[in-house]
Length: 410
Image (tube, rainbow, N blue to C red; front, side, top):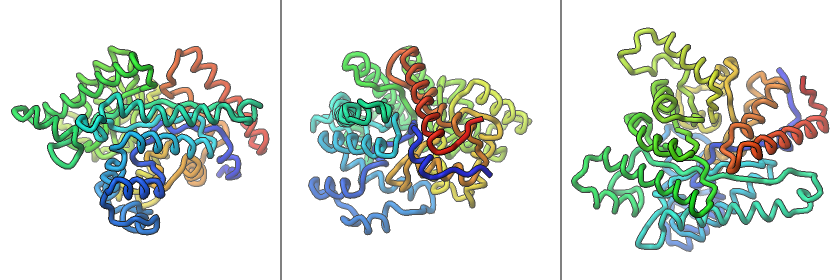
């Protein structure tokens, strides 16, 4: 198996295309925010939170998601949103991650009566990212050509499930104003409000909202139920990613691609599992999967791979070497290594790449491809020619780092 010096993995240019803001706060920052906002938590020490909430292992997805109630509560404050965004940008810069696409559901943070509108939330997040970007890009290392510039995009998530209680003040009021509607109609209406607001904020406020996403409980809420929302985004030149194949089978990925125009797939873990296909009309499961896998690979629909997160939320994966990442690699798919949640999964992009190269055969040329996909398949906020030149410059930097560490690209 090809081995790599950890210093090379740390120093090579990287991206994170699947990164949740509310799952990636610094613990000391969260504690400060909770104390200042009188947010009740099971502990107010880093050790206590790691023992009770942000663990090294979780028994299921529900336990994994438990901590988001605390982070979302802390982020219902514009100054906290700005600070969390600023710190997250710098956390990535410090490990040579030069491009991030940070996603979150703004409606989880919104409270209209408290001034937490969609625009206010997005402006606060953008201010944090932009401040960090300007600070780093004006540094001596960048000015002298020693390191590339840092950039970012924002992905606005719709929640595929929410209710009248326990989600956010915005969702509670949204249900009250739609009290005579069916639950799914209310959820879809909320998603449509989100995508309309995202397009408007991008076009009128120049906030780099580069894509929409669909997050939350996948089982029972497949992408096809939200095809109208994705059609609206598609018709307004908005990129699209979908959480699919994380907790539901290949049909979810099929719907994301064929009904929601997905450019990328979040997780995509169950793309290879016949027993997860529930559609009774699929008679030949093996052929269905083979055709779908080939179609995804051929279209270069990028899968946002989150190894540690999958290990923590999927009890069926007993060992990292059993992860379907091996099938993704074997089928030469377009893949991007991501963290999902830096806090909840206690990880970094560097750790995720190290986990990949330590447990799967990834030759230097293939490793370069994985890095390149992160830049080339990003939803870069700018025109295609600029994006193309930017991606080429990043891969030139990759070659320089590889040469420095004696990694031969064949």
